[in-house]
Image 1 (spheres, rainbow, N blue to C red):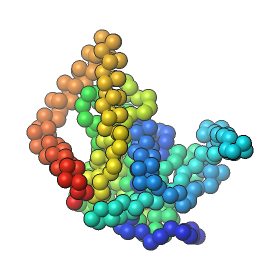
Image 2: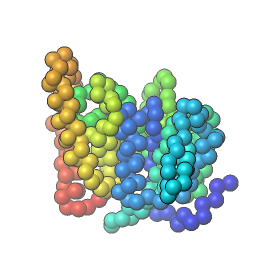
Image 3: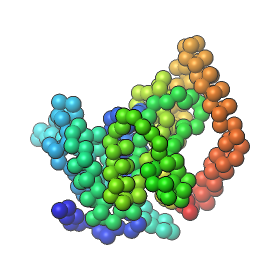
Length: 284
């Protein structure tokens, strides 16, 4: 049984999770949760036993020195809690770790045990994948769920994916079977510039998370980092004619496909976000 000593009663809690590895192109998703934890000064209250879920020849522990004493950090998944202020305060349970090497069902059941004990009302799992998307355009974010009713209420896609999956997909399905509302948000990262970090994709995930759960996320230096990242990729692309031509073809395909949306809901959504930030109010 999970006992949570020292964790206060939470207000409208939402669990937000991300895992390094196969589900985390450009480290965009795990960086998003790390950003939330850092900006809101999350307090770790639990860590899963690394022995149960990780192959240490795949995810090796690290040794470091602290006050002259050698210590070891084991690869694992940690949970922290943050209180989000504002007119309607609420709590976030942040789950940040590495995709487990084994016993995925037990791993998900343990996370669901924490969710149940904490009264979590919604689980949001962040992911990032490689795609045929140009770095010069807004990062595509897809929101999916296995729950048809939840898809209608939150303006999400009901997932129809078939094929290999990672811990994001497994956790979402585990939540569905346990009766816990769950959503996945996926950022598409340009496959031709997949190395981390990708602050532009991280920023896009956080913006979509804002809209989904009704909290205002402090972005810090992320917008500037995203602009600098794009300028850097622009310069690299300009030095290679083939890459520049390929990016142009992706731009043309993207613009053609999204022309109807660009004149409607997408612009309205961005304008609403701008007004919220200008007025200092959280999404409502």
